[in-house]
Image 1 (cartoon, one colour):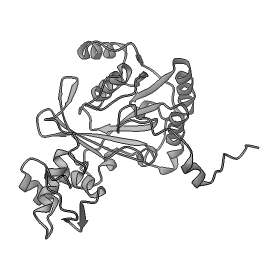
Image 2: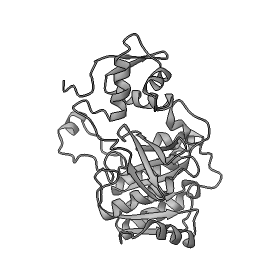
Image 3: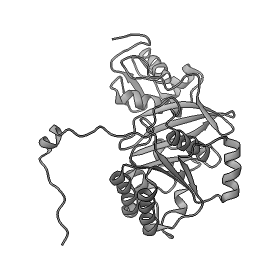
Image 4: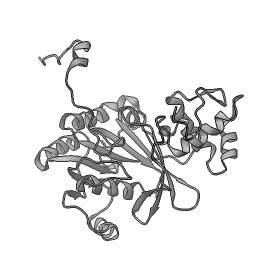
Length: 311
């Protein structure tokens, strides 16, 4: 008979000296299960490769601190030749970044993952793609299958290892952007952090969104050239005590100038650059900070704060 897990008084737990959450990439990737999704050919493999290299070398990633550690990149779709070609395009890679071109599936995959973590002292694992990792025949749109994702997540928690799994996004736009991850009801629910990439316009601009059970609400514009990524025009830098990015402040300022309410489409029209979908994403982040509220299709200011005001 299995022993019961530890049961504690919650107040006693509050008083314990427990270390704060580890972020292998600040605000984006934490020990447990992290999901990265995007449509086909929108750069998620190059993005995850750049992130893995940053963690393995301890260098900042998109201006965010990393915790250095050994990283294993499991490539379930590309062979050694393709990985070699990508490495040539990327440039010099840190010695702490490992790569593997095949892996087991299902429960055996979880056992093998745990063995690799212990044997190689891994701190981060990238699975590109998760479709080559899950049990054959698994219905990924069935929440009842969440036990597999939960087991994967717990491996990360148990060993303080960030597991980043890549997944495809659907073609149709979604009001709630995590729903864009195809057939992933259980996966989204079990993810500690959810990272979405979406191409903006016809150039090299990509929109990055982060949410999840523990992932911080982050909205960034990125530019990419070949296989390398950078913040677009300094985006992502929090401004003042309100903790709003430049795009969030711009959207909030427009809402503040329309106290009788304004739609996302109306904000987008006045802004001139953002789409209504991007405006909704920014204003949701502002809403979590208590500065705006939504009633039906309209956004209203709650605590008017102008750009540059120190409050």
